Image (cartoon, one colour):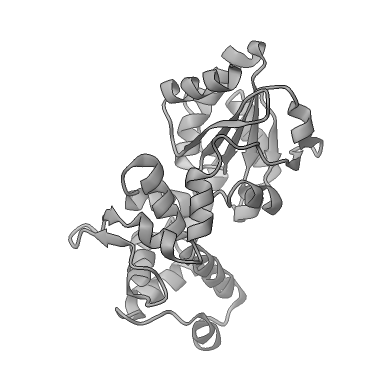
Length: 293
């Protein structure tokens, strides 16, 4: 099944490439020197005074402190560093070279742990020191929970709302095996995995498997509307419930920061498998079988 990206997303990407975030990124590319920390207050007071530019700078600053966790999580889960393209996918970087600029700033900033090495020619990440991230008090505890802390534990309780406003909560799945699928609109690995989940749901629903698509658009401030999300679900024959992630649920599940992230829960309410990023059908079916036991 081929998934079409909504036209609104393509237009949004084109607008972003020439909008306030592009101006912020270009300024950083031209003006941040190796070894110099980026002082956001100075940029707000002396460079970016327009509201849209300030909002773009705020998003990038927020991203700045999420990248180490993402890179370390990816290394721990996949056994390899993420590519620049994968970093861009996760953080919705649509401006050419944006991921490289953010990583360059991170490498030169004395506040950040020295946790990665990059190819000087391509800029691609060649090595990730997960232990360096773990040792940093800002990141270590969250990383430990998200990488190693969920399989074998009871699934944290949640109470969220479906697109139509109806409640979706842990109580709905008492005694049932289920999958929590964390994703956001037009996340490329989510687009690739969605048809596999549709197929799995069609195959295993009769054996009791439930799936909840937990959409992170609102938490991540993705510029998509409910109409776009409804249209996406309709076009791709998604029949399982789709609901909105809340900050409380994101925190309960370890500040999910890689999309997609999937938690497979058995009939006793125990997480039996946690998967991150794109997974092939064989890996997904193996996890489903664990939940169905």
